Image 1 (cartoon, helix red, strand yellow):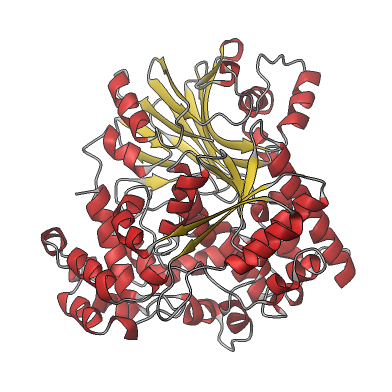
Image 2 (spheres, rainbow, N blue to C red):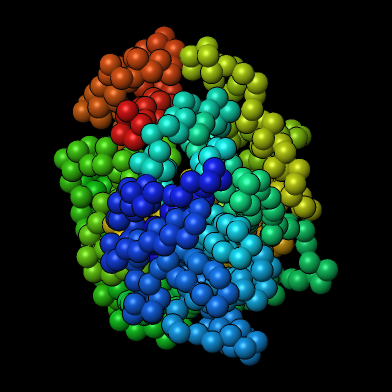
Length: 591
C-alpha cells in the first residue's frame, strides 16, 4: 500500500522535480517506509512506499522495465499475483522481484489494457509507456483505492489525495462545484466520480481506465460492470449459502496470506468483523491479532461494545487489544482527522477509525475490516423500506435515502449554488446502467459500485492510510460481490438484513453477536449535538472564513443551531453536523 503521484506535460516543458516532491511530501503518511521518483521527458512519477509484499528494494517504486520501455507507480494489493506471475513466466517474462508490483507491469507488457480484467485486488496505478508516449491510469473495480487528477491544456496531474494535487499547483480551481455540492447534501457527502466538491479536481471512476496521449487527448473506458441478474442455473437456499460461504472464506484467506508482514483484524463486535475472525480460524489461522476501540460513556448511551468483541476474541483465542478513547480526546483530534480526508465526509466514525488506526499501526501494517457487508448483503434499515415501496423510478430510492428534498437543498445553500435537481438526474442515470432483475437488486448494485466508494470505503482508506496502515476489505472481493449481486433479495433482507451472513455465522461465532440489534460505531461525544460539540460546530459555521465563503443561507444555519437535535436526515444523520463538516473540511484543506 502506498501513495502515488505524477505529472504528464503537454506543452513541451519538462516536469519540475520540485513539483513531484511537493506531492510526495503530502503522501508521506500513506507510505512512510521509503520514497522514489522517476523522470523521463514529459513525465514525472513519484511514490511513497508502505512495504508489505517483497520487502526488499527490488520491489521499490517507481518500478522501471527498461526492456519494455515502461515505468509504474502502484497503490494497492493484487491478491492473485502469484498465479499471474506463473502465467507470465510461461509467456517468457523474467522477474527480478517477488512482489505484485512487477506482475502488473509485466501483465501490461503482455496484455495491454486487457491486463485489468486479470487483476484481482484493490489498486490504483499509472504506467508510462516511453515508446508510445502514453500514460495509462487505472482504478480497481469498486474504487477501494483512490486516484485524483487535475488536467488542463498544459499538463495532467494525478495523486492518491487531493492534498497532494493542491500542493503541486496553486492555480487549481478550488471553487465549489455546484453539481457536487448538490450530491454532498443529498447523498450524505457522496459525490459520484468523476466529480469532487472542488471544480479543479476530478477522480477516476471505479472500474475505469484513462489513456492519455502526448497531445493531451485522452480516452476513458469501463472495463468491468456489476450485473444483478439471476444466474441461469437455479439455486436453492442451501446452495446459495454454501456458495457465499466458500467465496467469502476464500476472500478472507487471500487477504491474510498475501502479505510478508502480520495481518490483524479490526474487531468491532458486530457480525461482519466477527465473521472474518471466525473464518480465519476455520481456515486454520492461529495467533490472530484483533483490535477494538471504545469510547467513554455518555449519560444517554454507552460508548463501547467490548462485551461482543471480547466474546469473539475469547472464542477464538486471539491476541486481542482494546483501546478506550476518552471524550476529551475526540474534539481536539477532529480537525486533524479532517485534514487527512481526501474529500469531505459526514460519517462521525471517521475520527474513531483515525484514532484506532494510530494505535494499531504501531503493532501491524495490515488489517482486515468488515466494510461493505451491509451494502453487499442488505444490512441497512432502509433497504426493506425501498424494497416494499409502492413508488417507481428514482423516487422509490430517494424518498428513503436522500438527505434532503431539492427544495430544502435550495433553502440550505446560497443562491449562487442553486440549479437543477442534479442528484436525482445522476442517480437515475446510474441506476439505468445496471442490469438487474428487481428494483432492490439495482439499488444494492448501485450502492456497491458507486455510493459505498465515497462513504465507508473512502473513510477507511483515508483514516487508516493516514497512519501507514493498509486496510483490506474481504466483503468487497470481486468474486464475492459478483456472486452476491445475483442472489435473490430474500437471502439478504429477511431477518432484519444480512440473512446469508447470519446463517453462515451461526455456530461459528457467538450467538450474542449474531442476535444483537444492528448497531453503529458508538461515539456518544459526537452523536449528541450538545455542549462543547454544539459549540464546536457553532464556532465553525460562524467563523469569519465561513461567513466570507457564504456557502449557506444564514437563516437555515440559525434555524439548525437553535434546535440541532430536531433536524435529522432520512438516515438519521444530523443536518447541522453535515453543514459544519463540509465547512470544517474546507477550512482545513483549502483556506
